[in-house]
Each structure stands twice: as structure tokens, then as C-alpha cells.
Amino acid sequence: MPSTSLNRADVDVRLAPLADVDARIAARFRRTATARQPVHTCYVPAGRVDAGTLRNWGDEALAALDEHAPSAADLAGVIDVSERRATEVLPRVRAKLQRSPVEDLRIDFEDGYGAPGDEVEDADAERTAGVVAEWLRQGTAPDNFGLRVKSFDDPELRARSVRTLDVFLTELLARHGELPGGFLLTFPKVVDVRQVEAFVEVLELVERTLGLASGSLRFEIQVETTQSIVDTEGRLALPRFIGAGRDRISGLHFGTYDYTAGCGLTAAHQHLAHRACDFARHVMQVSAAGTGIFLSDGSTNVLPVGGAEQVRHGWRTHYGLVRRSLEHGFYQGWDLHPAQLVTRYAAVFAEFRDSAESEAARLAAYVSATGGAVLDEPATARALAASFVRALDNGATDAEEVARMTGVPEPELRELGRV
Image 1: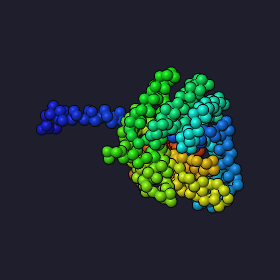
Image 2: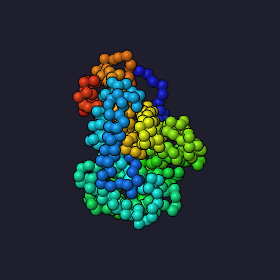
Image 3: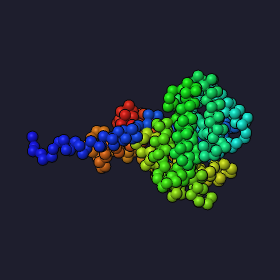
Image 4: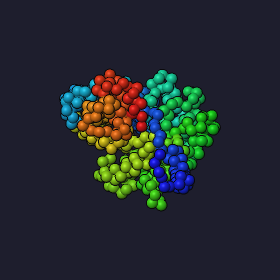
């Protein structure tokens, strides 16, 4: 045994305070997301949600695709990818739009809905709960869905926000019998941590009153105010928001236009690619790292509607912004119009396929420990595997193709890709 000079008791005294650090880190970080992250969220005003909403979004997207990009050559000309890549992507986009066009739906009772009056809002909350219950009965509900309630930032709307949630959940539980999996709430325009604390207390009250399991009501915070990035005392706000959420926060969703307006940008410069948005997204990314909280980018109001050139312009804009979000590690974003589903899935699928060959070679080398041109760390190997898991889940590839490319069976890939 080698000789030492330090007294073990003296060392232990100096290391003992780190036990508190270990406890705090274990409580906040080192978490993995057990649910699958959707690639988008579709926001539909509550007054327009009906039994056919999900299928109508898919049908409208397919109609736009058939009219403006029916062939791989047409699609390649619109979104500026090779015809070979478009040939791979197009049938998968079409299949996705036919099978499950909407992955995540928010019934919007906030900006997109307005304030039509208590009687109308009560009726819409009750009616849309019935619509969702019927989707669940038929097995057609998206994997993820829920409400965007009104903000707590407006004193006159706080009670209305809670009442809408109460009416909706009371009716949904009466019809469906239990809180369905994948149910989420969107909490908008947060400017102070005390609003998060109050919302959590409301959710606790709802759970106790309706007999729901504690912690079952989860929510995502919309990051759309400057105060949700830097608070009034000059501190980063999101870490405190996340702490106040008490493990209920599932995601941070960026709000493009409220945030850029809050930064003082003129309308011409209010877009997702602005550097002010990059700063906000980086803060979101750092704040949520290691917590298992999903990140979602915002939307573009340049819609693919109107004449052929307007549709192509809307598609090119949306496709470019989705690809940019993916490059920044934001794997989800908002879609405001059915035709945006075309470029949402085209961008997600093309992003994966553009890098799949090289990433598959790196992953295969790591798993077989044969080395290669790039010496990857375990964390990078997890990221490589996670990329393939996302692609399997969203339809960009299939298990047979992945096994052929990587030599890794799907169960092993999923275990390696857990993040």
C-alpha cells in the first residue's frame, strides 16, 4: 500500500459539505424524459375545434401537397433538396399525413381565441371536452393534447383561466372516466415565478377536488416575455420557474412574436431566425439541460396559403426555419396551418436522412469498439442513438433500415439513446 500524508478524517471534513450539492443535483438534474417528444404542436382556437379537426388538418395538408408538390421533383424544387432526397422523403411525408398528421394539439383558449364572454367560453370548454372524449373512445386522439389556458398576467383573466380548466376537466372526466395519458397544459406569458407557484397550487387544488393523482396535471411554460428570460432583479428566470414547477413542467415553448415585440423589434424583424430569439433559445437550452424538460421552438406567421408562388414561399420559409431549429437542438415547434405539416415532416425527415449514413457508421464503430475516423465519447454515442430513436418514432425511418445501417437492434438502440 502506498504511503500518504493527509489524515483521512481531515479530508472527510472538507468533502462533507458536497453531500448537499449532490442532493441538489440529484433532485434537479440527471433526469431522463420517459415520454416521446412530438415534432410539433398545432394550436387551434377552441371555437374551431370539432370532431373532424384532426382529419381535416391531414386532408388539407395532403391536398396542398397534391396540388403544389405531387412529385419528388416538384418537392425538391420547392424546398431546395436533391431529387434523390425528395424521393426518400415524399412517400414518408404522405404516409405520415394519412396515418397521424397531428402529433400534439392544443385547444387554444388564449391569444388565438380571445375573450368571447363567459357563456361562450364555458360552452366551448364543455363542448371540446366532449370532442376529446369521443376521440379517445374511437382511438383517434393524438398522442399528446391539451389546453392553452389564459395567462395569469392579466388580473381580469386569472379566474376565467381557472374556470375554463375546471369546466373542461370536469366534463372530460365525466365522459372518459380518467385523465388520459399525454394530457398537457400550456401556461402562457409568464413574467414572475409567483405566477408559476400560483398555477401549481391551482393544479393541486384541481387534483384534490376531482380525485386525480397528485402531480398528474403537467404543463409547459411559454417563454414569450423578456421577464421569462431575465427577471426584474437581473437573474435568469427560467431556473427559478423550473424549480417552482415542482416536477410538473414538461416543456418550455418559445413564443416568437410576443418575445420579439417585447424586445422592441419592429414587425419586419420579428421572426424566428433573429439573433434575439437565438439568445432566448440558448437560455432555454441551458436552463433545461439535464432536467428531462422538452424544448419547443416557436412559429412563423408566413403561411403557405394563396396562389402557387405564395404557397411555395410559405413552404420554403417554414422548411428553412424548421431545419434551423433542428440544428440548434430544438426538435419540436409550433405549426399554425395544416399546410405547414408538409414542410414540418419534410424538414424533420430530411434532417435525419442527410446525416444518417455518417452517424450510423460512427454509432456502429462505437458499439463494436472498432474505432473509426471519429473517436466518440459516450455522451456523443447517446446523442447518435437518440437521433435514430427520434427518427424511428416520427416516421423518418424504420427498424429494418436502422438495423441495416447501424447493426444495432432496436431495443439496444433505444436503451443506448435514452437521454
